[in-house]
Length: 200
Image 1 (cartoon, rainbow, N blue to C red):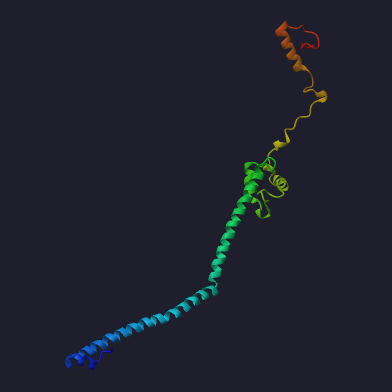
Image 2: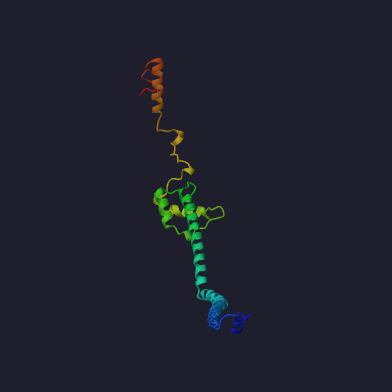
């Protein structure tokens, strides 16, 4: 039931007080209405705020921010992959340069090969080995020939032996050894003959 002067009079409230009660009631109701209307206004803004948010997202995407961040991420992944590939190529080239079956360069030669090689032209197989390794090793030995070491895998070269298989021009060393052995066992040999170490 609404609060009215008639209702208050029926309750036996004095006329002078009825006006005060009505004024207080009206003020309270108006304040509640104002607060209610404020909440309603805020609630009415929610759909608009949601729309503004969606528009902001779309605007950011349309402005290229989304694509920019995506590109930066893709570039970063590519950079990491390239660095890893380069490290693998350097390791494979270093192994080839140091190997006796490969270029077999000195430490200085290996350092120069790693510094000046065009790694874009180097390809690795599934095992991480350099493709066409033999050709590259040959090229490296030619390019850095002052740093190329002897290939011990081929074995040491032997000097040309003298005719007849002898290691000298005569048997003087053998004669001296024989004469020494004979002197130790039998005493000094006679100073004659051609097979007992004596000099004619």
